Length: 86
View 1 (cartoon, one colour):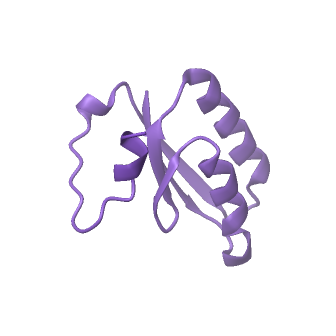
View 2 (cartoon, one colour):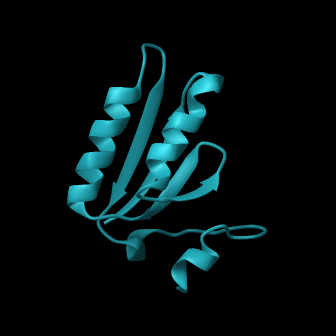
């Protein structure tokens, strides 16, 4: 499964969401992560993010069944490029 995660937290707490997200996904922009993830890891990610959030904060996780369904265009340097060719 391919996932795009975006988050909006208080400025002094954004690093906490980023730290959690980086355990499972690739950081591609400010407050945006994406990548392939198993259903088990996605469940862990959702639980960790849900536990982190305070009132007024939010995170959105977009789930796609496959990255082949995603039409993704990057202008400039692609931060995921090195992640795909290990």
